[in-house]
Length: 421
Image 1 (cartoon, helix red, strand yellow):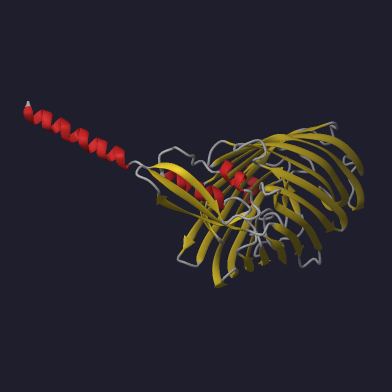
Image 2: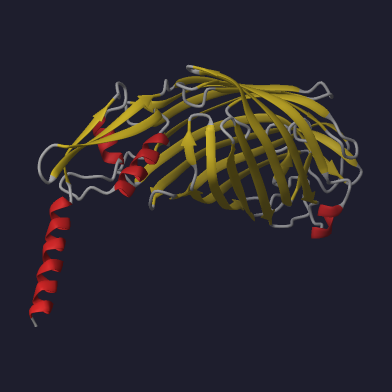
């Protein structure tokens, strides 16, 4: 009996000792921020005053801060300030967030197009994105957008965009190819919801008008030479982000699912649905290498139409292939590359990459056997270089050269801001 009583007292004393060692957060300090408001950063982090010190919560907050456009790097420090209390300090290094951008792309067919613009990623110190662009792709285009992921609290935000895009689009007919002047004028409103640290949703509606005007090339009695259609689009995006960020290096897995239903007022461009998922995987290789891979799987209503939704394009999925050279109703695209830091000093990084882009498409009205058709398969290896500023958000100027090795292959150079994927 005495032994049991002694054992009980010993366990009680150990428990009280452990409880006494539990630290509570009595003060939270944020430092290093100049443009980003402290009140905004306090809203983003999960750690709160009076709660028990939780290293996993602090670790999650650090990576949450690193994902903000305004933050280049984040760190923390814990200091005991009384018997059962401590001060947690979050330190941040800010990015420069007013960024011009440019995408330039060409091919051996002497096609040339570019898009230039300006974006502010930290408007009002609240990580609100404001941007606009001008595009020249034979015709003039322009657009503007605002994205405020935290405007309604830690979990809920809004995004709005307007675009007026005009391009020369090839339309693939049974007896050849026709070129149309294509205009798409749209407005879009999205609700942004962050379920937790890794899972985010976007859902909303887009109203747009498509205008096709025949320019030259083949004709088909069943395909109109002029077409103007009002449409609407319902969109749902699910983003799982398990990436770890350290300046120019990424590690981990990310998946982005995009589901859309497009309604139409014209039977010649009937309603359809479309869905695609981008699976991305990044792996650190040694201290200077980064392997990056993206797999896109996409499918839509299999309508036998020359206006199919999945495009084969230089600036979207396969570097060097040319500007919008084909369309399909399903797609499999794999982009994989090895990035290596060639030189790094202070804020500047010079990075080289070796890549392989490949993909195949299902023809409109076709079947899944089209993926194995040599006419649809494209494989483009290539080389690239990156000029990176570590303290300016997304300040990565890239140049890639892709050279096709499959049937009727092209070759070309793609310029742009930001990594290709």
